[in-house]
Image (cartoon, rainbow, N blue to C red; front, side):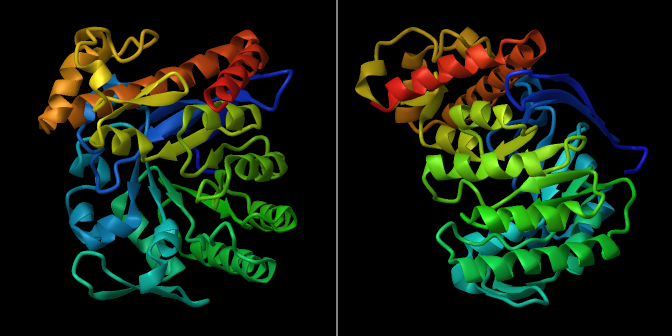
Length: 374
């Protein structure tokens, strides 16, 4: 690992596999476990960069596929890199575009060389190989970059998933060889679908390379929650203990506390801002839909246990008024709240690890979740 990066485990939970740590990057330290707001196109939707920081954002995620298509990595590089381009002074992580290979399956062609796909913007054809994914991310200049991988569907058969993890490993080898920027930490990604044996094999393959961190991909892609947690439980302990572990695409609060208890340190998800754009706000372990008429005369904050700017200054009645009037401010305020609420939840989990109360917190959250889903 470059001297610019480091990961220190500060506290370990004696009852679970959870740990509280600190990840060092060229643009600052990150207290873990951490939720990373998603800024797909170099912007967290509905949020000024300073608002993201005020809401508790320590690091944001940007998307290689989208930035490659628009405005182009060359423009970002000429602007001085993503940090200057989007005016975000803290750490940034870019994904490799591998998830878009999965989500845009109807318009792509996957071979061992890479992926040919059709642009969702103008229909033009493009090709991304592991080498191209590294070149794009080197030009974007994020602190943490991801290896190019194949994310297969959760219902993929054993034979296809087996070929997929082999391809992902071969692509990682090519990514390592073509990665040219020592100021960026390259994370590998383990895959394997819903097959525990393949997930074990993938972990052995990916972790045979000494990388700054490792991610678990291909979960939370439509499978039942119980299946996701089962696969996570079998795979998380296989990743190196001394390196940060990143579960991709997970952001629901109950999933976060369960995953942290299994040893995961980093998370990202678009649901916080996506929910906001549909008029929903996070509260408890679930959400409230502010379009509901019950909130028309509700002059209480979204959540009594939230100290964010929105809950301190606005009521559900006002927020519902904004939502029903389709005001831009509605999604801005709800995005702020949802990100802040998640950041506060992660801080509560971290504190419970440090103070020895995670097991009690986990028991309470499991009881709440069971009651919520009765």
